[in-house]
Length: 458
Image 1 (cartoon, rainbow, N blue to C red):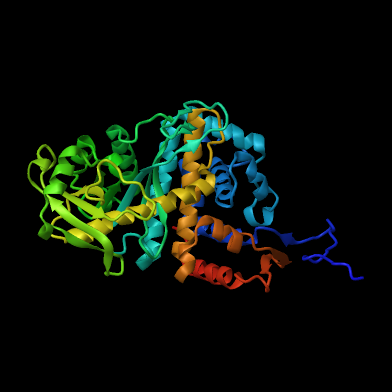
Image 2: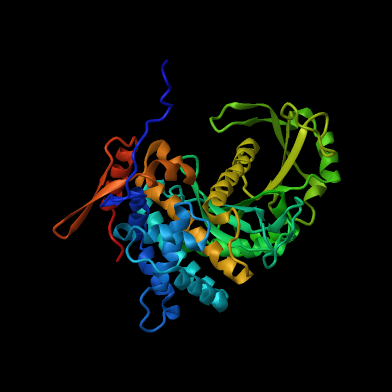
């Protein structure tokens, strides 16, 4: 009688291994920090919070937390993973020191937040310059997507309330720069709000847009070359007027609620007014048409605004809404971009759905929950999450090619960052020897070579 030996090989485990480094692929993030200049900009910005004779620099502590979050951590204590690998991450502060820094920064309020944001803005311009044709402004256009995200709280936290989805937690409003079809995206703003904050609050959209614009290089902080996209939560008179205000001249593409007046105009639109919608490859989108509405619907809105509606056959199983017409799903958006076909503008607005991918990446990078109790502490945590997401966007933009540039954080962790290596010390050099059998060792080595070719900051 034969006995099964199981599906997996049996191995004997010993705990006396030496010179082995886990998470060795995270050197990609460390090199990105160095080439971007974050290891200089953030410590300089947080210099006022460094105490005399302090062993650990506040900027280094903050970057260590961001690296831990980028590698999958979801609380301050996860810096222990970095502390276990000093050969890669250097000296890492203890948990009490990390907690004290967060408390100190939280007590400083907006002053500390502004210091971190200024450092991020300074570094962003350098990274985009290094990225060249891979930068999000390679075509002299920048697209910023605003969207809200619900963060569920599993314990009683300050400002955690019931949400519109009948959950309990917070409702931050975020902003991401879209990298286009050849890349991912990076966060430029995150406004922490209570769970019961309204989706279409114009004041919050204006505040978030201000924070986002301040993160962009100066030439993109005003002018038509910067496009602000939102869903229907941004379709308010106050927010659209703010975007189009004289001297700001921003381009916008904001979703609009289908009102009764819009519904009536859609029903009256003649057949020749409808144009077939298109896909990203230029082909006609099956079962979808777009039309531009004019007349009294635009009264009271900024000059130059265009109102574009789309009707589309609902997907199988989808339930029609009261605003739908003749069995068609009706959606609407407004834009101030002139002299472009409405089908092209509708496709541009539809690509705003990429912001959902950015939110999914943020949830897996520290935004699944807010780990701290007080709102001021969680505001600092949101800044740390944005630094982590910036690193996860900048590293592929600077060093990866082809489909690897589109990998989301979870795939980067499984394939690249989790690679193990042997640490060899020779003379004054420390060398990481990556496992030859690891399928993605080639991607790691090639990416490190690309990063090595980039000039050092300063």
